[in-house]
Structures are given as structure tokens and as C-alpha cells.
Image 1: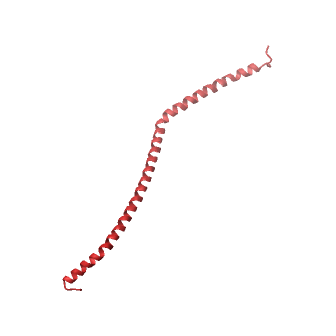
Image 2: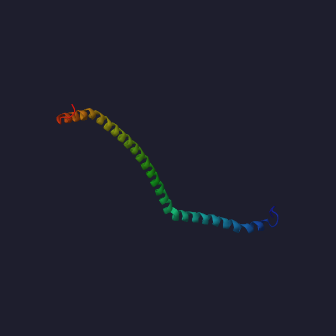
Image 3: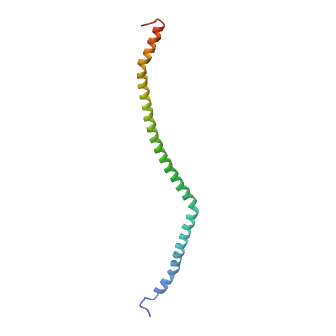
Length: 108
């Protein structure tokens, strides 16, 4: 006879179906998780594509901001150059105006 008290084997035998159910439950949970992963795979892939698209748009926005800064500098340079050229042309325009006036008998 064993050193276990009577009824211990009976007590253990009552819980073996629970162990089987837990084991079956774990297998069922694993199978359900696998099935859900497969079902959700297109959604997960779409979300990854969405993340990649968002990243591409962020990079594009940065590039466009940089390009905008360059264009603003070029526009400022063009404006400065136009002012300089107009200032350089002013004496010549004044001379032409004087010649025109002189030719018409106006101011001398």
C-alpha cells in the first residue's frame, strides 16, 4: 500500500479531465490565434502599406519644404538683381529722357 492517504488517488482522478480540458483549451487557443492571424493578414498588410505611404508622404513634405526654401531664396535674389539693374539703368533712362527733351526743344 502507498503512503498516501486513502482517497488521494480518487481526488487526483477527479482532476485529470480538467487537465485534459486545459490542454485542449491551449491547443484550441493556439489554433484560434493562428486562424485569426491568417484572417487578419490582409488587414495587417494594408496597415503596413499605409504606414509606408505615410512615411513616403512625410519625406516628400520635407523635400518640398526644402525646395520651397530654395525657391524663396532664388526669388529674393531675382528681386535684388532686378532692383540693381533698374538702378543701373536709371542714369541711362535719364539721359534718354534728356535727349528726347532736347530733341523736342524742351529742357536743356
